[in-house]
Image (tube, rainbow, N blue to C red):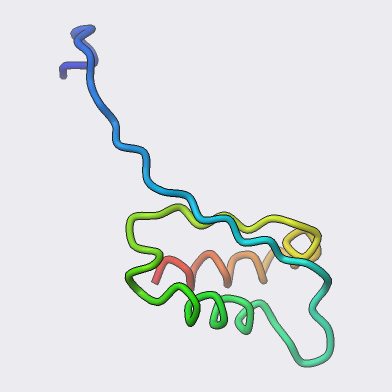
Length: 76
């Protein structure tokens, strides 16, 4: 309601974590392996209240379903 009335308001910006993925997945590796490794590194507290962004040539090489897997498991 305050915003609609033209009053100032404050929005807290969460911390951002950038993860650069290089190369391509090959053989028996999958997007699930990527997110399990990231989850092991960050732990539960590491990603709480943060935006996790994946970038790099490895992120571009992931399939749409692979990106969905990382997104879904990362939120859990």
